[in-house]
Image 1 (cartoon, helix red, strand yellow):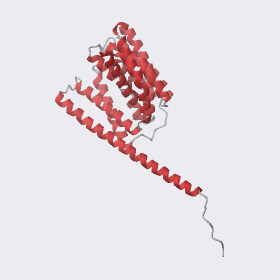
Image 2: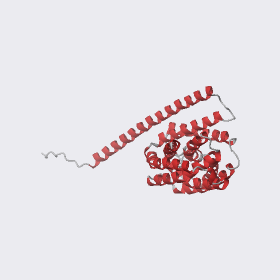
Image 3: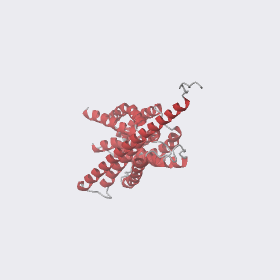
Length: 317
């Protein structure tokens, strides 16, 4: 029972982060399952089965709060489902640990770009509102879906930074659309795992525990993403991507850094991330005050030009 409660709390926390930032549910949950000895295919299958419910609730909540671009959902979700099914059947017979460091390196570069861009200049405006093309979203969906099922998570870390980096969709709609389309990915991956390893390799009590925690957190996360300023949200997403993938790289066979190297690196990242978030918050508050001042001045000027002249007129002599 204690393990089930812990899994429910992990599901709650993971979905709160995932629904607010568009990533980390699968990575967090799968990491815990692997830590307690679950084999990779069964761990990923468990998480994806739970995600069928959490992504459905999360998608509905994001839709309710106006965070979903349905064109993006279908353009990336259907190819993502194809990639997820292929990845699930592939993982059932083969590990993809060798590819993890390379993918982490790519994601680290995207994370650095997003952190610098959003912290320095805020929400991208040059391309905002321009449609995301199918020739961009379809390959992205296939790759993200494959990585998601083979790595136990990756739909958000691959899809969210790539769309954010394009500057064509505001952060809250990027996150809402990625979370909503993940339902298709979760269903396809689950089918692939059932075909590959059968239902015997999945602990359905663990699935239920993760599901309950995620369902509780989903509406809260959808509300949060609507109210967090885009500039601050972008800085937060960039920091999470950098920290997560730096950790993967330092632990990989490519580097295999000792604790004496890893922990100072983590400390530097936390300090820089905190400074970036603080700067983004300060700039957001300053810009908001400037906008309020401009609006107040415009309203005052409009009132002055429309008010009738009530001053008495002196009689002519």
